[in-house]
Image (cartoon, rainbow, N blue to C red; front, side, top):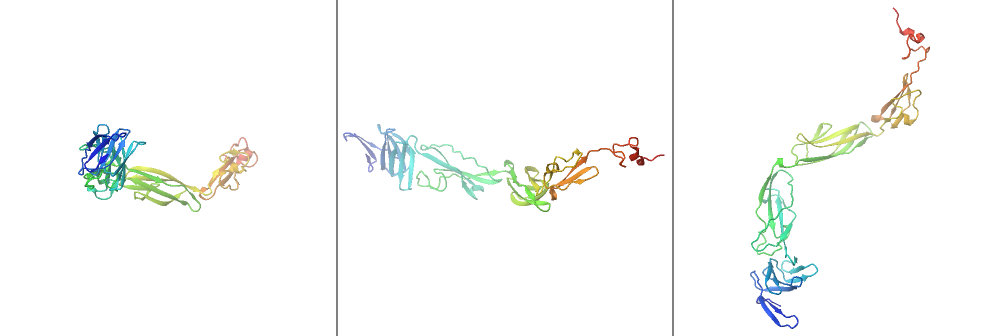
Length: 360
């Protein structure tokens, strides 16, 4: 039984109701009266809340104090399923859950400011917790990893007793405004930052004229002297951008630099709308001219075949995609056709070749 008037706990025999003993509760706050009491059968402990922002855990057999936690509450319930203590706090409108074995976690978080001494924009980093601290004790809190976006002067500080700057302290105090330490200034030098950059572009098809529009975007991080180039010609010094660029037929090269350091290279291809490619007859020697599409072209529109003295020629594709195919006629010398062919001589065929020789 909790006696709030005189800060005592009376222990009775649960079967007979006889008095076993009356014990003083070792409250440590400014107010010496209790608010609520609950028995923890798992650990054979009695939990008592008091109005001086404490929860005291007592050994139920000896009444010895096991621990005192800086957590205020009006009502208290033991949760045997989770081995937890639930505390209701009407003052701060909180419900607090404590591990019945270890007590409450102690929250902390770090803040980063974009200027010296807490100036500029302040950002809360992810919070962490540690086991509750005894009176006068201390522990080391580590901040999560953080990458500064650019060179310059920043500032950092640590804050205790909360997970962010949005709420008040989880441990009630007379002054909730002193949970953060002093700002520590940090100078980030240019040389200590990793410079990165990337390009994204696409191919396009030339339907008229000699170029088509390809979309080009680029981004950099920590770059100090950006240059974005197309086929070796600079078109922007902005650290990031998104624009349409006219590209010519074939391969076009885009390169991103920070000073003289190459950050990224990407390629965009200007394709022809009727791209030609020669077929199987191209470059061959044959008795008759090619006639099927496969012989003439692998892609693109096939033209008519032109017969020449030495063979045949044709085209595949159109516009900037046009290519020319050629096949050579098999050489068969005919003596008497009044043509001195390559395999004929004055001796082998004087009728055709005698006019080609001047005698002295």
